[in-house]
Amino acid sequence: MTVSKPHGRLTLLALNALEDVLAEASVGPASRSWAVGLALAWLQNAGIAEPWQTRQIWRDLGAEKVRPDYEHAVQYIETTMLTGMLDHWRRKAGLTADPFWQRQHRIRSIAPDLEPRPGTAHLPCMCNRYIPGDRERIEKLFSAAPLRPFNEGPTIVHPREPGWVVRLIDGQPVLDQMTWGFPVYVRGRVGQRGQQLKPKPVNNARFDKLGAFWARWAREPANRCLIPATRYAEAVGNPGSMTTTWLSLKSSPVFAWAGLWTASDEWGAVYTGVMTSACTELEAIHDRSPVIVAREDWAAWLTAPVADLSRFDRPWPAADVRIEPSTVLWKDGGKPEMFPTAPSGA
Image (cartoon, rainbow, N blue to C red; front, side, top):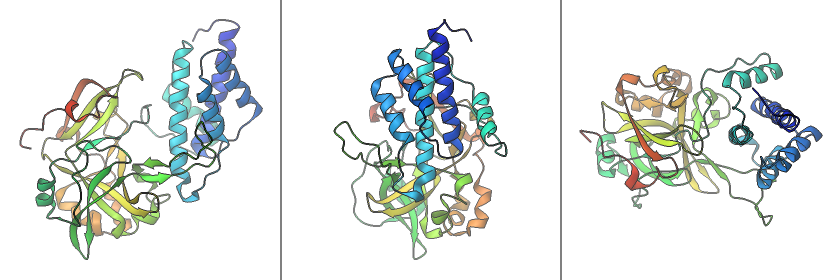
């Protein structure tokens, strides 16, 4: 890595100081320090970081979590946001982003007992949009009657938008409509006028956290659900020019994504999709993928004891996954007219 002197060297030192903060935040709380303040001030004065970006990171590092039960979710949001910011600043400075293994090495230096997880570095766009498909087909496929009258909802579902889930009531499957994402507040994160910002939706639940952060919902079959979907989208490519790739199943026009749901004070009933590690063939798209439940296992996901759920922690076979790359920019790929036609047999 070549940097100009002396400004390039100072920029590199500032970015490395923030990489250490990212490593700390990945395994626990990260505190603000004079070194972090100097690093942010240097990057801002050098024209690499925008003032609002440095203010946001400074606020996040000093923020007190209002909802302790969502600590892990808040930590995930903040570390992924900081990762994207650091990668952006490195590119502006003419530097390459730290390879994934270097960041894992930093984490290991802080927590030697933590085994680095395999995978590739991605922006936090993971499974942030999907297409449910036709409601009548979903009702018929899942033998689920609508719980109540509700609007059709968006063609493409994004976090904080309404989507359909199938859950059991008195042992019978029903089709319900909920908000996609559990709400998360962070005290100290305020708008330009000092107002408290709205909570952020946590729409993905890592399978390896079902026994920890997500345990209160995973262990209760009544809080599990199935999310009907025909496709889900991933962002592929370089930030700023990322394109939309859609994934679906060749074997079925509609599949069931394992989910959890709860009742929230903020948005009423909410749900999140459970994620597992992606199969090797799909890691270039993303290192995680939805937990897709085979039709013969739908009842098991909705009723089995939590100890029996480990068998669902596996990716769907790549041979059955249809990959539909496109030239549609990620920022445009959430528009209904921009997704491909339905798969054959849909």
